[in-house]
Length: 258
Image (tube, rainbow, N blue to C red; front, side, top):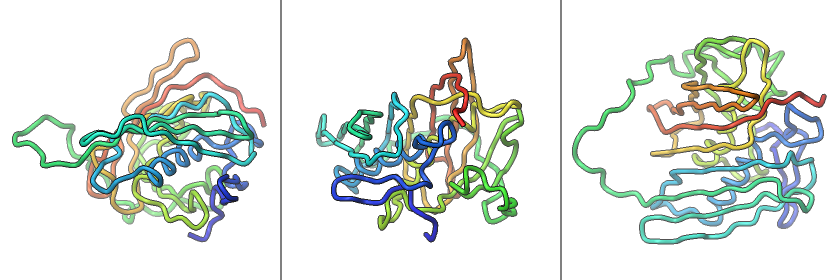
């Protein structure tokens, strides 16, 4: 990838680049790079090809600045069929977020049929013209192929998304890291309305029954609710072969500091 990565490596620390800035404060990180880096470190240090990272939950309780980042990990449980790993995101010496990942051993699927939602009948990414790149969202943080709806609308929204840069310089995106670094998009996609985005998410949870194939991830908003400035949002996740899981979040009413 030719675009500037979100992080470079300095010993045991990760140094944010300007590409990692978030929308709420020009001196803070975007939530997606927090989620992405926590997921990437869990996979890098504790991943296993015989296990599926079935759930990643990230709590984001402090808006970190652009200081160098450390990620610490701890294996909570390592059994024959289930592994649980915790990780902590430390920015400028302060804890800004934490993650728990549950990895489940792959096995033979049982017989029988179970109800599932209808197939996602949408155009493939290559069938959708690329949008005008002269005004790229978030400075070109991702590539988009909108399917229906969009920011500033109140109808159900669907889109394809692909990464345009590495999360960490020199490290290729794995299928799981693609999901982890993209998952935070569930919040703005589900919680933005006709007055733009007014909620900042404080967590993200991703559920996967399989890892994606290819570079494109599909997002479909399936839920939004809000009362007294507290919101929830949920999206189904897809790749070009079909459904892969879901992403959900809770969020707080927020004004931009820009």
